[in-house]
View 1 (cartoon, rainbow, N blue to C red):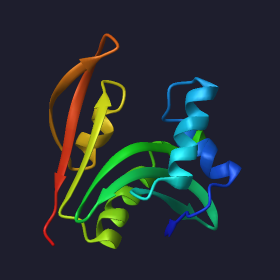
View 2: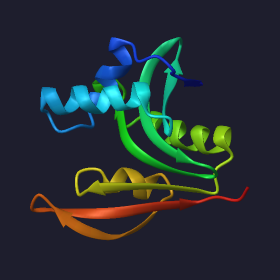
View 3: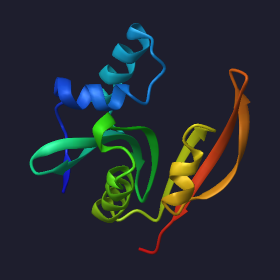
View 4: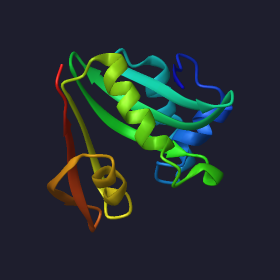
Length: 136
């Protein structure tokens, strides 16, 4: 079940942190931006009342960008992240959802129905622009 997360509990922060470069200062800055950014939103996918996946988004009208998405280690590969993204798109009535990612996560976006294109390499890593176009 989808739940907006206006407050970042330690549990939700830990889920989002799974999708971030492991630098404590950088993670703290990103989490602070989720707490204060007017264009930022965090959503949680719960199963049996337990948060199993969380996504941090930048929202601009009918379009949004997935900035971070993380799933509990014991919940990966079960469709929770995909269900979360599709539920967010429906909840926000999005026409377009995008994400930039690397080779480690591009398969997730492909399996979730996103079209995959190239993006400029960053930090010596190949990057991909993933786009999900939706009917409103």
